[in-house]
Image 1: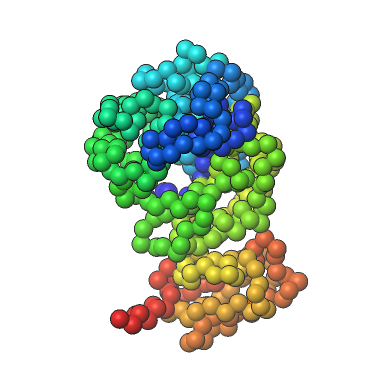
Image 2 (image 1 turned 45 degrees about the vertical axis):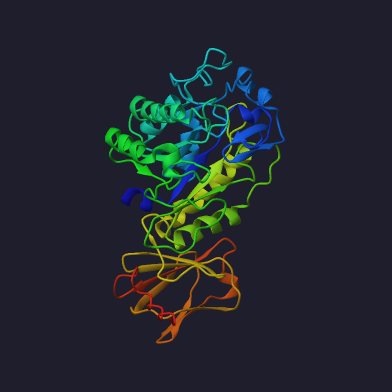
Length: 396
């Protein structure tokens, strides 16, 4: 877990033939859903399932995607190889509904390109794999046991044919471990690649939690990662509303301040290119991280919990106070068990820092506050991570 916790920031990529429609991946496929039960209005299943016969993303360049991630300051990628729609972006031998299939218009092993590019650039790689599969004829039928064999077979392919894989990112829609025979699945996966990290969406706790489209709560006793879209959809949508740089940095900082990671999703276009405006936003995040990454990478959350004012991260004896908004001229924070021996405003200017037995107060002239983040480094006389004053026990 150490490298992953220190990384703090990863790229989540949702892509597939659905990009031709500009609608949401998986969820815009109409038709029967055996689990969770129900039907949905949207692109007729027979139309949705045939999109790959006309999808030719000839401008796809895995190395360019990886370069964008690197320039954004991201340390790993979570790449979707199969969503709930069942289409496979890898050269599976178990079904023809794949990017290399006989009826595919493109015939490209996308997973191989991604894996090769990540390995070459030393970018860690997670595989997103949806256990629910609304396309597979055996899924959640009386023949579901055959589907489990299919699922396990595909995970074996993915962990055997593409070199080192650093993690599995399952997405089980609330299914239990029994639905996926998860204990045997995990055992097989860890035998093939013992270093794997596995998330919590396969009916077992796995290695980390995955709050979705929200910032996780302050949690230092179990690792977590928020997966959040850069725009509104997971899949590409024309003119989709994109988050501002301020929103993106607030999200990253608050995740790190809560002791979690951020997996920020980008949705490539039908051509295979990442939308230029999304690339620009990611580059802007990377530029900020080049200046202030010491306050994000390799840190732990705390010692103070995030609040309306912002969030704090810490490393060694240093606390990084990220003031994201000023509700008043002074930020009042709880007391610490360690003494503040010095302070520095990393974003420029000077701070007045007062420490008493009752708390810590930080004030900065209004002219020296930064719109994105006013960043103050506090040096303590001991380790910062455990410098918070313990909360009194709740009455029984």
